[in-house]
Image 1: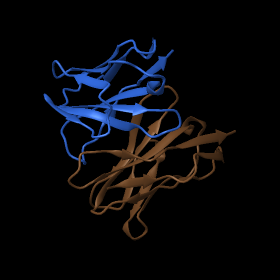
Image 2: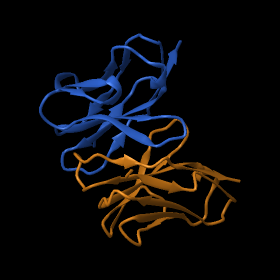
Image 3: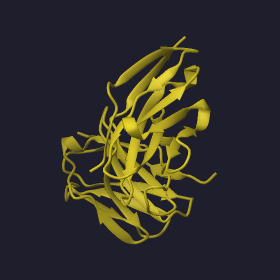
Amino acid sequence: DAMVIQNPRYQVTQFGKPVTLSCSQTLNHNVMYWYQQKSSQAPKLLFHYYDKDFNNEADTPDNFQSRRPNTSFCFLDIRSPGLGDAAMYLCATSRDAGGVETQYFGPGTRLLVL
Amino acid sequence: AQSVTQLGSHVSVSEGALVLLRCNYSSSVPPYLFWYVQYPNQGLQLLLKYTTGATLVKGINGFEAEFKKSETSFHLTKPSAHMSDAAEYFCAVVSGGSEKLVFGKGMKLTVNP
């Protein structure tokens, strides 16, 4: 089945220690998104790639970076995680850009910062 | 800017009862509206969406929603709740010309036997 895969499902890191979260997709979609979802809150868009074009949200902290080496993979790098970065991180894809497109979500990676 | 309001955070219904989850939106242009469901420890799954055309939209698992422009609402309903419907439900909006999906805070649905 075509899908969005996130690894690992759970990640524990130390305060200030860089961490990378991974997302891959078999849907061959052009757009990949990263969302942050804190407990009992709505998912918040951090940034997205349309093909190789990176689009950062204005309020995404500089501490968060992303890489998309090819169509299938996208990474979220947190350079110096703080306690406030503990959250569920959701990767999503869509076939194309545009509001009408459905976004397909992975299962998420839950990040714990000690 | 567009926004979504889901009043309250938790709804509890009995199995077999009507499910009604409310969603109101704010948008300066005709919106695209979505309902997503999130089961525990899983990602979000699309239930249904409204883009244009018929205002009553049918989705998966027996859910439907009606776009009411005059009320700026897109409430989600299901005639008869099932235990497997227990999950968190998110309403979301995209305004025409924007690519950004803006979510409401979500509503946790509990189904009691």
